[in-house]
Image 1 (cartoon, rainbow, N blue to C red):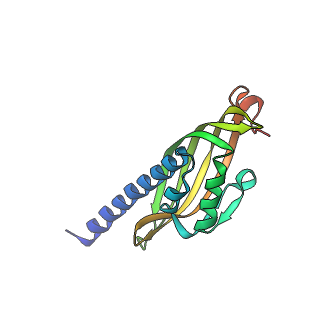
Image 2: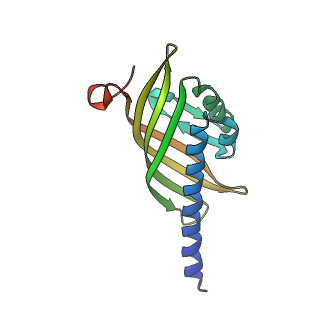
Length: 159
């Protein structure tokens, strides 16, 4: 097999592994934001940036601590990660990716559960570690975070 063909196959395999990684991330989010599973998804120096809504968390411990606490705010969620665009770096050990998110959720609003919608765009950076691909940086650009009853046309962002 030619070196070029081997490199192309390695890139395709890396893309598929990153897709599985993002799926595991979504599953961990849907499992009450399981911080122990998150530990296997992020690098030790990871940055998770949720902007003004969820804040910026630097380092694997801080990211996992954030997820341990967010389940008290979002008591149920179903994440859909769609339309991935993944680019593998020339070195074969780094990559970037974007994903759209569509999410139904139940939030704890002063003790009363409230159904809602989230939509936005993830921008990720990945790194191949000895254990496999991990997320080293994640930024979410929230476009809507709306109550189910109102929808995003009436209330694009919940208070």
